[in-house]
Length: 398
Image (cartoon, rainbow, N blue to C red; front, side):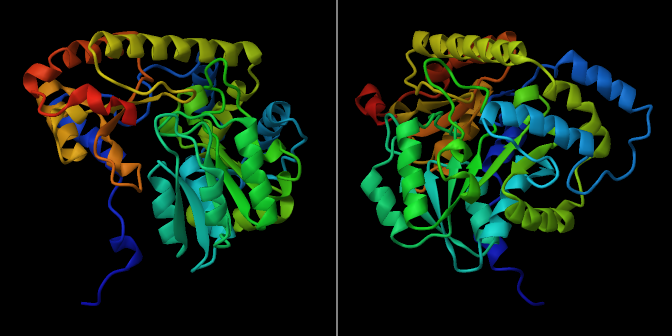
């Protein structure tokens, strides 16, 4: 038989989602794949119950139901700081995963180059490869995960078609400052590159940090494709509702790609989520307060156990330094952690272009009792996986 696609041979399955399967296999507390174990807001669930008995069971408009796009445009116009046309600038997608892929396919030709910060959410590498483009990786250097402007400009000198910006960042939790974003915007303009943003954690940014929408920077709206989802904000990761916001000429192309990728997002779920988009600021304040509490609870627990970790500025992920355990493979460590300790994590190497094997990622989008259960299990970590390395001497590498 003829060989299969070379593109699909050049990357693996999702390590994040693989670790959920490993967690399930061993009955581990799943702190690997970032989805909550608590319910969406009651108003959304109530509307879902109503929708199940109404006439929303057939295809919606391909690029999103009119009332959903109008509600989303109103919300995002308020937060992004400029008017958004629900008809010409929004495409509703099957999660931000499809939004990012549609954006990449809209922008990139085979052979084009795309700048990706490392560490990065694993889908970005696959998106680039599936489009036939070539990634240029720019490191976010630990412990504070900042980029070197000179290194970034060296990447732009290779004339990339686009840069992918995850802000707040998964997995490291960085929230890019306005100054950093202005450096990126100046280079994008100087070298005529598009910027594709992934801003799914826009409402989970811890004080004193603030989220700045890249498209709102001077001159950037016309060259930015803003991708996001409703999954994290409303705890509906299984609903697969995402979107792109881009100028009309770009959105026209995205709509065509989206039409043939998935036809459209689930019509009943599009209708059911609209009450969430109409929430006032009090909802987002309460959301941030709840995640701030969860972050503090989990980090205090790790501190009490003497486990070195990062402190996220946004999103809900923590990187843990496992140097002391002496593993050459962080994947093997995560497998042992699930089997022997009963806690699921993601190997850090799946996020880094660089040879990083001493970090693992936890998430804390869980009920308090789930986080406390995980911390209780981690009390036995050193007994069940004895330390072999130098431990604290390498903590500064986070």
